Length: 281
Image (tube, rainbow, N blue to C red):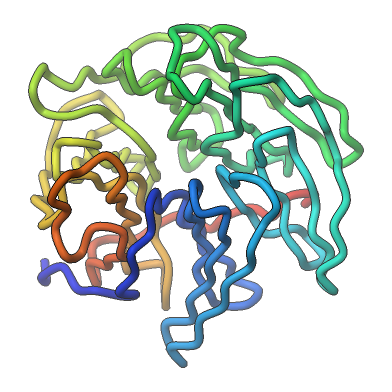
């Protein structure tokens, strides 16, 4: 395995949600607290930045271009020409959107949390392209990583303060039979964003742990990657063959952040990821 490299040197306050868009061959990621959506094309080095009017927890590609975004007050759409519209608007004082993921059926699973991280103050809900909303988990504290097994039969989910990676059966729409897959030990940080590779293993970023870890489908820890930054937030595979592992990082709350805190990091040829699904597919 090669060494960690810097893909984009940046000072993001809370970099999050890296997502590979195969249609444009670019990586999409957000700086939640700066209300910015970033893109990066590894081949050309081209970067873009879109400022949003609210804190943005996640941005994912749509089937016919544009983005679906998880904002402070709900889920919204950007068309390919940049036009903005709300899909689901549900403002709750003191609450914002956080991490999100697109399910194999093309729906968005969007999480929320309170700014003060009050226990049970957030939730996880499913949104279809026509705006139909179903609450999946009603009492979540800090809704984070969500991903599916290669065959789509399992869904993995993280509510960070629990220190657990949970796994559920997926019935095609809803998660059922939720149980712990792995627990992060005290002092090792908190599980944040995750991605699943072609072997069905779960890669998870450890906030305040300065690591990425890979867990097998049985829940065994089989790989640990030490990072130069204290607060990695999430990871995803991208680039040619989906073999490069991209890692978002944060500098919020750190009195003396590492110079790379807030940058987008990459581990070339780390493995092989699963093809993503666009919202509405």
